[in-house]
Length: 81
Image 1 (cartoon, rainbow, N blue to C red):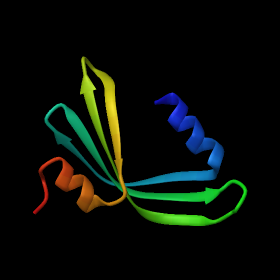
Image 2 (image 1 turned 120 degrees about the horizontal axis):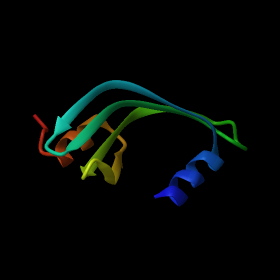
Image 3 (image 1 turned 60 degrees about the vertical axis):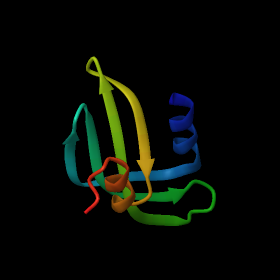
Image 4 (image 1 turned 90 degrees about the horizontal axis):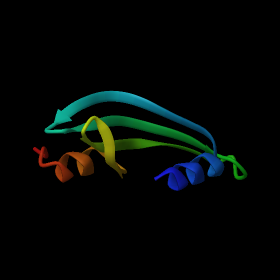
């Protein structure tokens, strides 16, 4: 997981997470919001919905999954309306 995060920090000059909601889903957390990025070499800016599903075991992060939209995340954890 650390290698994947390092690649993100190297590719983007700016990484900003804007939280709109956090939900408890069993032993996991669902983070909902937006991600804003600016490319390190291209300077291209992105601003889009973003969500993270983090599973905890024994008080430690066991896994984390990213989703490109709130709808995708809610569907993945069985909370889609």
